[in-house]
Amino acid sequence: QVQLVESGGGLVQPGGSLRLSCAASGRIASIYVMGWYRQAPGKQRELVARISSGGSTNYADSVKGRFTISRDNAKNTVYLQMNSLKPEDTAVYYCSGGVLRVGTDWGQGTQVTVSS
Image (cartoon, rainbow, N blue to C red):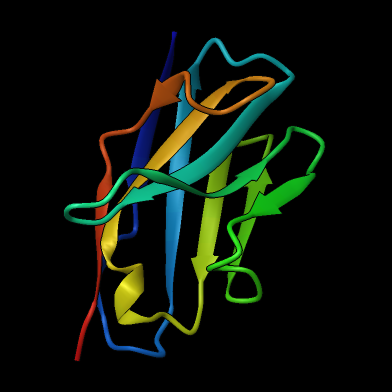
């Protein structure tokens, strides 16, 4: 079983930046995919970005060019660098992982609020 623990959320002004981190522990397969979802109030949870163990990435259209996902396999940690944040980025951000695809394991979530 894999445990995921997020950190790095908070309150930021529009145009600002935040970096989220997610540390994985437990039995992690070499083909473990990691990623970030978010859920805003009254909306469905959506995939923001994901990264394979080899470093291949995918992003939601709404964050392309502003967010960057990366991972440190030696530390079993995935990061989400968020730049040029907008009020519509406000949500609870969840780390997720799984063998070959995300969605199996989940973190507890971290709140990101973009507001002046």
